Length: 155
Image (tube, rainbow, N blue to C red):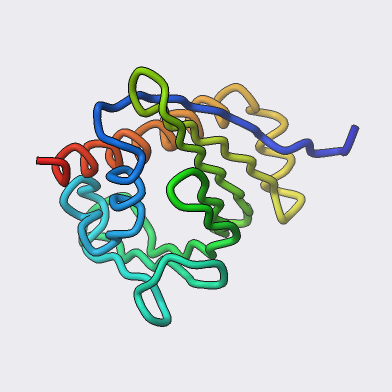
């Protein structure tokens, strides 16, 4: 077992929106601020296309407890899978979104977070339950917001 094992959380939510509409919500980063109030602006660089090698950039809304973020697009399999890699505050996160149709559209987000520095790893190990709960809330909030956007786009 590594000195500082990664934190791994999985959140699964359902929506009436189709997998294609959910995928459209992933792709339409410019509309993320409509459902994620901590974000003032979102875009995909270099050319606005959600494809491997692209970067999703979000800018924090003024006065909100959020930082500017860059999500590197690792895997794109429309409309079934999206994998993003991000770094913030000494941690690296790999978030894997899976979309599948059952009676509803089921979307599962699995986030794996590892400390890049000793202090972060020590803190995550010492307060593992607290860090895991925070990560779960964060992943659920983001996923719920994206599904809300998909449902808005459906109508």
